[in-house]
Image (tube, one colour):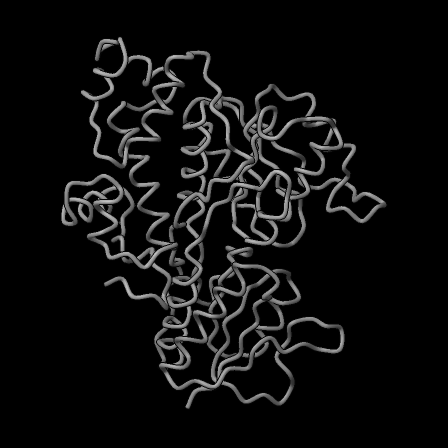
Length: 381
């Protein structure tokens, strides 16, 4: 019987999903969990006198780092807010892949002006914003950054709203803003409202993390990136299990790719000066899952294949065939997460010819199988 401490905040979807996944692992492994213990100051802390075997933690401040280190127990971190702390195991979201996913989503909307909003609120690593900037600049675009350390507003907001509003107003429009998490994204929607900036027409907002409540009750609802929280919890528990058996964790973190972009109203925009291309894109989004090919587009619209290819490359940086595949994969990822349909059924519903072709293409594009995206407690049969 192993006794494991769980020091993870469960005030959002991410924390609850990671903790739930660890609990499922613990049930299979026969562990006893100490979940979310707090001290007299309401801080997550392992109580004195606890004789446990290991800890899974989301390190959010230096005091927490010191606390876990003093325990002298095997430990695994699931936050990566302190990347230089290599004395414990680490499992976290692949920030580079998350940034690429965000750029791909914005680019599919025809957006070319980018910004990142990541105020220092102690909920995420600064690496999240840096990776987005790196991905944007690699494409020879510029990314405006909101200063991360602004004096807080007297009203208790996460940052100075007047300063943030002035920052937004002076940036080119329409603007694609990558917000670090749902809290920052929700605040950004409120700032836009106060500044009479329309979302998504003036400012399209994408949250780097998903939270059903925070993203859905906003007006407009906020698009977000859904993370592989189930897999993070599973891998962290397995890593701790090995550490408690004497195996030293690797100094390199295990990185888990996000699952998909959950598109909502805050990025519902097609900003292209080519009206016919906008119409073609809407046609693709409506019929991609029916099995259409580029030849079908050419029959539907009075345009040559060469001209179509050039216009897609100019505005979207990809071919018409790649756009059709992108829409199919977007549909497949949604069905994998939200339905109990079999892989074979989802392949057909997404416009792929058969399940083997779908699985091969999916792995080639995302580095994982379709079944890896299904919730851990759902059968992928």
